[in-house]
Image 1 (cartoon, helix red, strand yellow):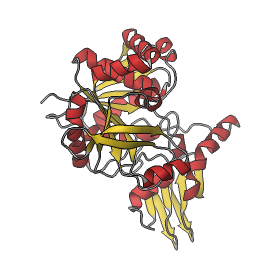
Image 2 (cartoon, rainbow, N blue to C red):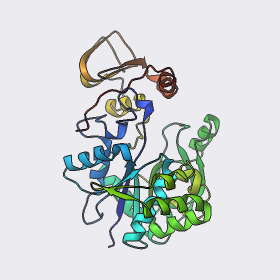
Image 3 (cartoon, rainbow, N blue to C red):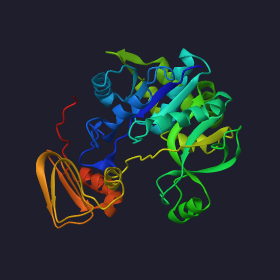
Image 4 (tube, rainbow, N blue to C red):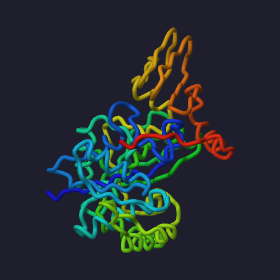
Length: 362
């Protein structure tokens, strides 16, 4: 059976997990939940040599050394592409398809986000196999998950008619990226699925869809690869070409417009760990338990999270509070205010209050 090339998209900034996640050392490379980073966990999830080729990693130029070191730390190697300008996921997906097409025309690509948490590796890979036939036939296969609440930060998928014989694989009847609260609630009630941000497709299929729906992104990606420079094992994409690509997600650029899109329903727990309340939910298993990562102690408290890098942090008589401690910053907030943090970080940066922490890349 032909092997699949995993492409790990690791270019995000993760400002909603400040102060642990910073521009110079973002959340996908931090040990949010344990000893390994989510980047390392993601690559390890797709290493079965019977199924997968070595991974291709697409990250920012400034994080390429971190990616290289973290791959080595878990005994893995792979191709690392350094983005010299941030252009969101559409440009990265075009580059992924072009790289794999150059190596083995028409072969399968599995694009996965480096900052997601999926603890059931077996169930994830079973979902990949369920989507293989549709992808080989020229479908862009999304991984859909049954929603637990009407989140407005996710894309929603309405499954249509069956694609083939597997009851978990359907054509996509409708795809909507980030609806408002009222619409999201209607989608949950009407059997829509969350889009998990994983994609399985043939490299030539994705290139064809870019040619149809986003040719300017594809042209910039071709030039960025053609003019790329090799620096100590990292392929640095050409900056001028990257800057010509519109800054847009793959969902808005291609998926909302393409007709060859199917969805396989995943039977695994998933989180994009977008905010601190999500970290608490994963580690607490949705109970009222307190959660500690690093040096933290609770007294007469419930439903709280302490994530401390360096100092012992003590919480007394608190409920549903997040406390994050790093070498140069302390964050204290109610869990239900996690969505406000991104705007707070922007304000701090504009006022000059935020000085990046010195962190190790080891």
